[in-house]
Length: 278
Image 1: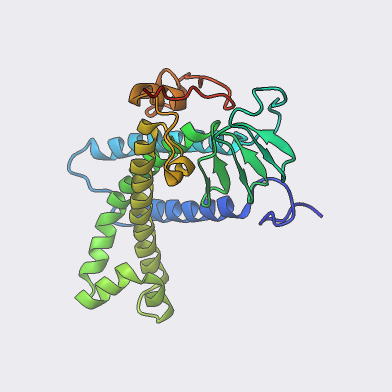
Image 2 (image 1 turned 30 degrees about the vertical axis):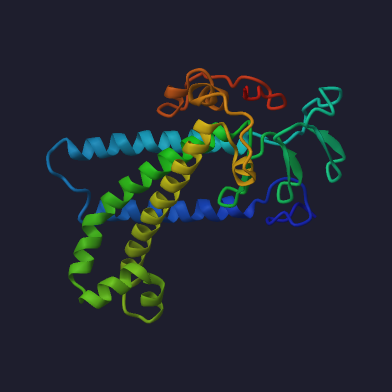
């Protein structure tokens, strides 16, 4: 038998979370296209507005798809990394599950079933660990995910506002907060539910991605991972600029805007310069 979707007994990261996330994003995208085609459409303060919305949407979609592909294709684990004889004993530990020595800042992930170089955390929505090799596309996904969610919410806004104006104040609040309950009780049609649910999802996604971007941005400037922050460790803080270059490469300011910028990461994820303390 093949590896289960949930990867309970197989190797590698679980497949189910990214599939569910992809289905949710697809559903929101289809609802957005339906509203733009058959609903009130996007806000049009002037003739250039539709073209600008289209260009912005294509730019956001390109960034999201390219960074998502790089995030999922990058293996953050120690597979294929030659570790033998590379400074063993200086902060290295032995992982009994992987049966291998692992370098500092690494950690074992029970979901991915492997030790991860410079492990930050395991992303449940994407079903993969965030580590040295895929930290940059993860950060770009947070940035453009927040922007795309806000953009989609703004495009869905006119249709949702028209729907809410036709409801009583109590029903309007209930539709915004509990669209599933309104659908199950027959208070709204499936089309009305889809509009409210898609808008709620966009707002929640913008808040989630925005909060994650602020949190990881602060860690990025401090040269910390989430695990090191939780343990109160700050031994690799080289200063904001060097921390940015260590995680994003020498062209760190441009990788946020365009996914095809060449900005190779310094190091190999095994050895990291430590902060100089007086």
